[in-house]
Image (cartoon, rainbow, N blue to C red):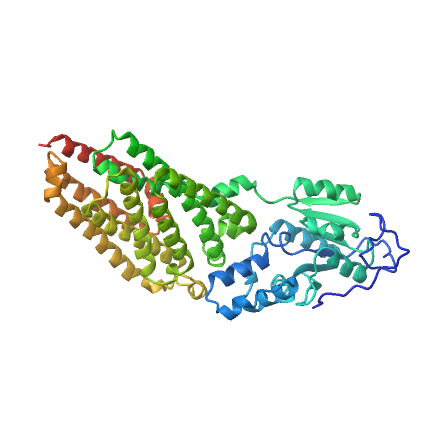
Length: 509
């Protein structure tokens, strides 16, 4: 396939207006009009709803790369950087989020007899693998490891190949303006309103293709506000300590709740960035904004930074900066490393749940007791195993999916994970039963024997979650599943009633 084409110098006598060939674009002859002009198509942000270079860099950072590999990326030459990234990372063209509306448009133009050319600043290895996968293009013009085919350089190469106004061009970004000024017709894909004003000023026929959802909707989706329900755990120590009238504790707990929510959203974004390839192979996660290309990687990174700064500011107000930093560090380490190791991943997940309880006790000055921490540890380990077992059941027995899983598990591990999870559920019930008969329960409750009713209630709820999991009805996250499950709400209500009765000394006949 064709590579980058070096342009010659522009003759001085040629005009540099928009209606003529610009000075930095080469042509000695203006192409004659022809209704079957070749159509040149950009790749990043146009044919695919992502940036292949940024994805490659993310894959390198999140992968197990040597220090020498990382040092090799330190180059001011963009074309060299793209070549080195392409050598280190397989772009996996079968998983990329293609613009289906554009592909349908190109198929129609190809049927009409137009020649289709993939003209991209991406490295030749990436461009050729995508072209081979789609089987749609007649030629490929791309960066070659020496020259970066972007902006003016791309315009020069296309004019030299097809002549001034001898081709149509499909792009999406401001860097495509030099190419559009030398094209006979323009197709703008998901271009901003500001860019479209500049495009229309060129004064040539323009077609628009808009398929991207509003950014705010995609941002809210990737932030996962429904997952903030996990952070309600910060209120548990205050509730179990019967400190519902402590105004200062409520203020600190609310600030911590908001801090952890903002921080968690930032980390969800980071996790989605590192999990792009595996999410695209998942039956449900492939529809997430980053995996589907609805949200750009650069926008996602910017949002993560803003959320993280907001979370730290709120943590300072709550007096829990250190505990939130620990939470963020462990969560990031989980996304980068721990999630790759079987069993270690679920123990870290359980620790992150328990850390929320500990954090709530610290900022409210109502410390979590060892009984509460032991019960929480076993319960959250069971829930973490529910999450992982559910994912394995969703993946199924596909060899391809198994080889591409970043979790380190195999589909056959589901049975032993279910055993571990069930054992953890029963262990949490035993801890709760032992607490009912402890001296700590006698000090905190007037009728601690009433708390024994919580044991079968909690055990029933966890067993029900496991039954839903093995039946394939479990959400990606058991907490989210519980928040939309009416039985779980009844269980939560029953627990609160039992705790109130035990605290008030109300006994049941």
